Image (cartoon, rainbow, N blue to C red; front, top):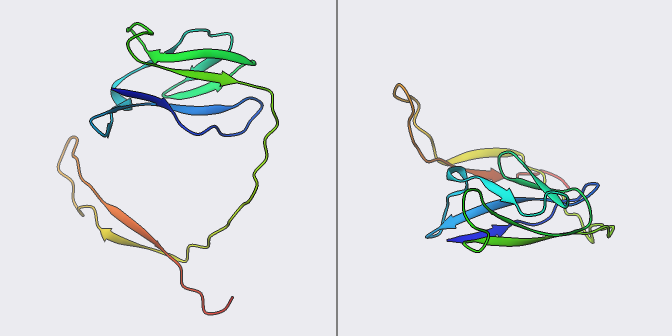
Length: 123
């Protein structure tokens, strides 16, 4: 089991996404997370870890011991700013592998892949 924390995204305090990976597959929808020190961070359902005040804590699988699988989370007051922003214009989207046009009743699984395209006549 790999447990981790994704890249921080700005805000008053940092926020990030907790995840669980099993044999290379994202198993996050199957689990719940807990925080060791809820005065430092909290879980915003389903898997967002939101910093509340500066400090360190651990995110772990709810219902399991912190020693089973956990990730260290540090919340700080440092101001961050991007070093570079790159914009991309998407002029079209094409299906590389289209979803089925008709789904059966109830729940159904399918895979689909879309590709973003750029086509500019002048820049």
